[in-house]
Length: 97
Image 1 (tube, one colour):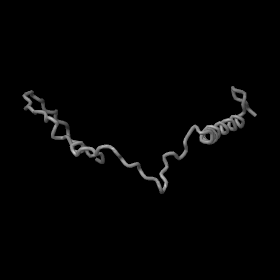
Image 2 (tube, rainbow, N blue to C red; image 1 turned 120 degrees about the vertical axis):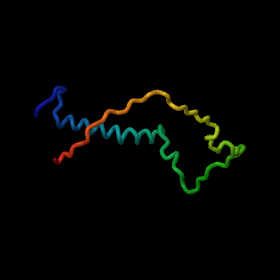
Image 3 (spheres, one colour; image 1 turned 90 degrees about the horizontal axis):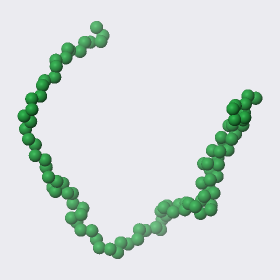
């Protein structure tokens, strides 16, 4: 078979890539979960779960109101600068003619 620059045949290179993908995508995450590096399913909600009751002070209703009225509206002044008109463009021709 033809060898490339690294000395592996094409079939051997494909086998090495396949093994690398299997290690990266399957073996390493599974081993991390088994060894306790990841807490798999820690955020999964089951049927009996309930959120803890909040014991602090409730929020005031003013916090939830929109603050649009607090914004100052900018004052618009009329423009005194001369703006030239756009040049006249010829009408578009029909491409079918």
